[in-house]
Length: 193
Image 1 (cartoon, rainbow, N blue to C red):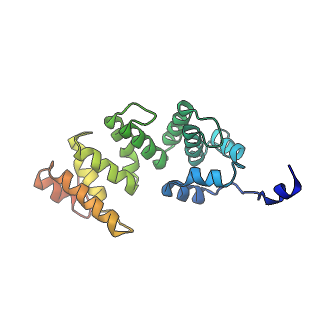
Image 2 (image 1 turned 120 degrees about the horizontal axis):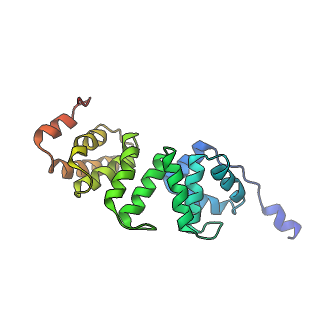
Image 3 (image 1 turned 90 degrees about the vertical axis):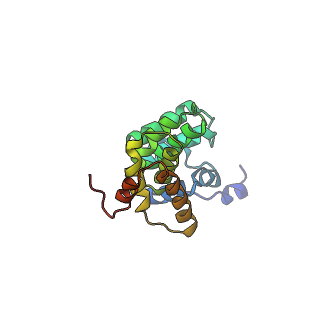
């Protein structure tokens, strides 16, 4: 490699947990890895497989799913996402739920999507709460989860009006499946069992 070309390559530091989380939430993690010219490939794989860090397991899984800086291998990629989800990563749970709901990389199975998205929603993930309410309002999952899912999303804090309006539409759809008494109960500041 000519010296001039080497001078243009800039060393890249491994992503902090906060930085990686923000990239994942923005959906730009794979784009960032490409922008960094795949320099962190071995570091990412090591953080996933040796250090067993859930966010890096998520990233490595997605890199394998889409063939970013490595050969595409969705079977291994989904397995890495599952490992991340098993460690409690709401991002991995949500991604697996999306893949099951969409039938991408996995057999379309909205019931299994509910299985994966529910714990992420219970942990406070707004995206997961919205997906859960959407799935429940489409008839997936079980009616015994309606009150809890409604309660979580109803009492969420929104950063923008568009997301708030989307959630209100989802809640209105779910409310049509619930008795008025359950809706009133789910709208309380604290949910009493």
